[in-house]
Length: 387
Ligand code: CAA
Image (cartoon, rainbow, N blue to C red; front, side):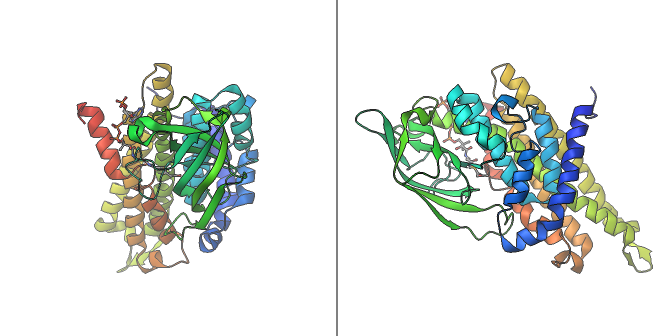
């Protein structure tokens, strides 16, 4: 077994690091303060192939593997988590599902513009009354009498990139009496009548990744835009989340790394009681614990990325590996940002340094794409076979 990245992976890592440090990092604080969506940076990410890393070139993407995706995303997140959220959702929650379950025509219409960065995609699963209980959808899709289109009514909430997205992978029920088995997936053009965007959510962190409610009021969706079969939607949603959670793991590693690097630098430079604080055992303990968790989180994320492709080839699910990586990495991001802020003392609490932003941004990784509690439930169910 070789733990080193290949030449190709090192190349994408270097390209992503250059872009992240030169284009994103300098403006991260301003975007955090304004909450403005970073359209120009996202367009540049598209030009670099980062909006559809695993998408074949024929559909506008870079045609690389999942490890390339996570290596790229760690670099973006280390500069700014909000940018990495937008990029992760575009790649893993939006493009992935259409590539796996879509027809050729759907891939051309709905993946090509998104993977090339000319348009933005979003994922519509959560509703005001169903977050963790994702199968409990009330958004309703009713097939018209002539069978040509669905009429969609209902409300989706916490939609990442919702305020600006051009297309949405939507989940709605065609038969509420069937629970999760009644859910279907649809490809929505957000610029058609009957789709109403709500106000942008005022959030604790990842503030430049715009989030809003999206309401459907008699929205007409052509039957050709249903993804997969009727009733296959929950399976699609979960399969897509098994990919998305690897993205959130990579994002978490990036946030944790940024905090860790800042803490090590500060421990080397800062003096107290006549010595550099990095010589104090209580600081050393924090640095050692951060380093162990950061390395473990990255290795679990790489394993999940590798396993995703292996599992797909074998027709298996990559549920456990994705949830293990997401759970451990997100708690690592929270741990490392907490410890790094503490090492910085008062300076960590100031907006003059990015530590407080890392700390606020880290929290969402324990919540979205399945809370830490849901990840533990998923892992335990997979391990025991019990429900
Ligand atoms: N892959 C394939 N199939 C799966 C699956 C998976 N990962 N998970 C479940 N299924 C299948 C089950 O096998 C089952 O099929 P059968 O009935 O044929 O056996 C069916 O789906 C129903 O599964 P469960 O009985 O396990 O469903 P449940 O209602 O108990 O809940 C859950 C499952 C794991 C809790 C799920 O609802 C879940 O993951 N919840 C969290 C939702 C989530 O992550 N939301 C985040 C939204 S996206 C986001 O955060 C926004 C963003 O933009 C970043």
